[in-house]
Image 1: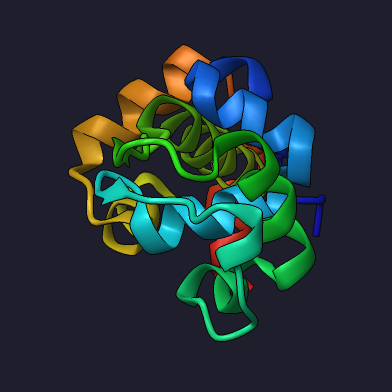
Image 2: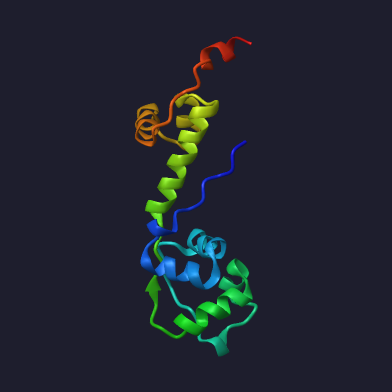
Length: 138
């Protein structure tokens, strides 16, 4: 199976790009999955503890890095990174379509319509394997 497409950091909102530079992509996206779209508060470094919810989500060391830059600021909304996540989803759909899955299977898997899948696949330039129908006969 081909590797999963990476999240294109240039599609991330500026705040998340900064988080990615400070703590890395995986912890940043873990924080987005946990609190994306919500107003959050990063404590000052001296108030950070291992019991803080974000320490459980991204690790104490990463929370300390964020606290040094963003600690004590007013609450701010953490972006959801939808544009980047949709791009990754579309790449995965196109990859699966080009290798072995039908539009119907992908629509069911991703909770989309078959028409949406066909549009995504066309936009990504993916094509179905030539022998897809023959493979179903075996």
